[in-house]
Image 1 (cartoon, rainbow, N blue to C red):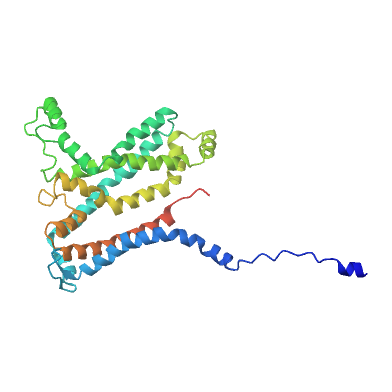
Image 2 (image 1 turned 135 degrees about the vertical axis):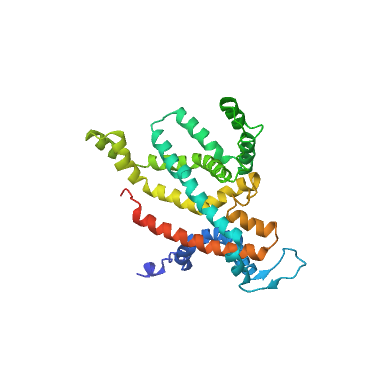
Length: 317
């Protein structure tokens, strides 16, 4: 018993410390990864938005040494009464409606008709159709200005050789043709991007629906109408929303290079008008007030289209 009592005690390792803060850190860890993106958005999106709201209440010419004069809501009142603003709003609506067939309907048709292309030919086709989208809008505008030039343009020379034109067509200086020309050039640039979006949506559709319809005797048109188009409805509504919200932005570069809003404001839109107020007339107060009005207006349009998408879109569950 004495020998057992004199046996040395075996030293036990100290218990590992419990990291009580680890569960709490794991809960907040996902949000830490969002900090760089949130900070970037705050600096480059919401900070300029707040500054624009502030400038909309002042009269200033953008010269740092020039004082800013507080005018309250006067800039907003002038924006609504300017005659060129009404013309810009009407042209913006025309751009939205005119670009929709070229950014939604035609790309969807192309995507459906070319869905059967496989192999290397498919990659080549996608590369060729997407090339206009990756080109700078200014470069595209310069190319089309050369193509549609009234005296040296390829289009006018070809039409003159075939039909012996009495007068050359002036695509950018004729008030009846200028806005349609801008719509065509913008839509031509967007066709590749929209087609790829619709092709990606088609690739995600379960082919078993088409196989079952073919077994039941459905033809190509019936499968397109009753299967493909309903399943493409989320993409259709998405591209429609993009076109409505960004049509003026997409056409700005072409307007600035080709027509400068003319002739007689026939091609101006709200984006070009904002740029004109801010950087040509140096009426930064008018430009900021108009920008805030359009920000609210487009925000309401975006909210409406999102609600319509939730109601009208058909999803494959």
